[in-house]
Image (cartoon, rainbow, N blue to C red):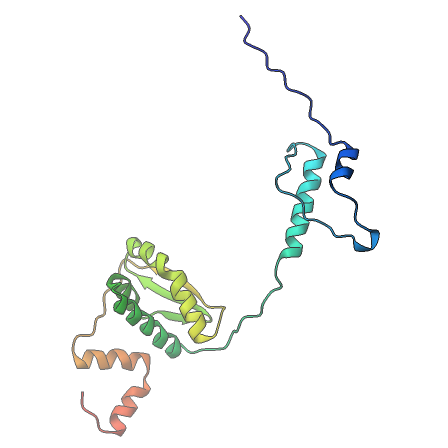
Length: 191
């Protein structure tokens, strides 16, 4: 028993006289090249489809904006840490305490324009990755360097180095900026 046969009509080719009636040809001096229309359906296996794809790609290349030279000013690790901590404070003010703790869990290291941040486990890395584009945009704007990238490294053996006492806080800041001890001794400051 055979099933019903489906008969498809042959594809209709546009008639030239109909096209001329709908759209008059422009004058030769004012020729404007129209972009290829995406609504036209062409068989994927035909030469016309290859030609249409090339036209679309060529049109898209002409529409791409010129490359903009973004600022790439040099910055120091101290500048980066200052902005990093300001961003963490911004998150704390907004109520994002978990993201703040991920930022402050340890100090990131600077390698050229790449900021390397260590996190204790894969779960915190996944959470951090969701905030990374915002942080990267903030740092790029504040440090005036659009080459900045952030690399997240998972280190299971990392220990949380929170400073609780004044001496711990001073030691941590002194690791970041050794000139702090000289300042303390010069002005004979207590902890």
